[in-house]
Amino acid sequence: MSPSHDALVARCRIEILYRIVRHVGSAEEEIVDRWIAAEIISSEPCSWPLARLADGQLTEIRPFMTWRVIPGAEQNARALAA
Image (cartoon, rainbow, N blue to C red; front, top):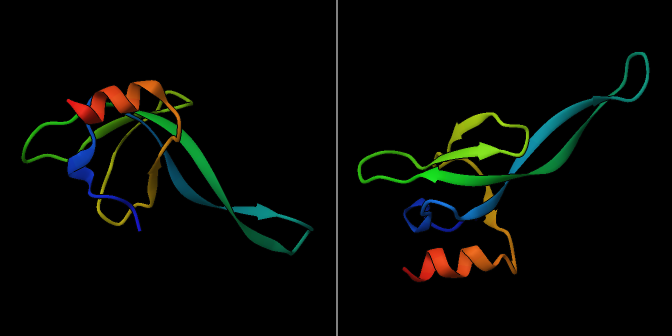
């Protein structure tokens, strides 16, 4: 389970879990879990935190999403301590 999205603040670095369908053969598929790096760019009261994914896309962090704080990221310690 992910921590509360209320803990996310701007510049916090996270990874978001995405499930991707990969084609193995001509008729076979498998589901692969991928962690995608992201940085919180906006976190305001009464709205979902907004994150920029590693590929530049933006996404809102919603309660159904699985995410984790990137361990050891120095900016996370500073951002979460504020």
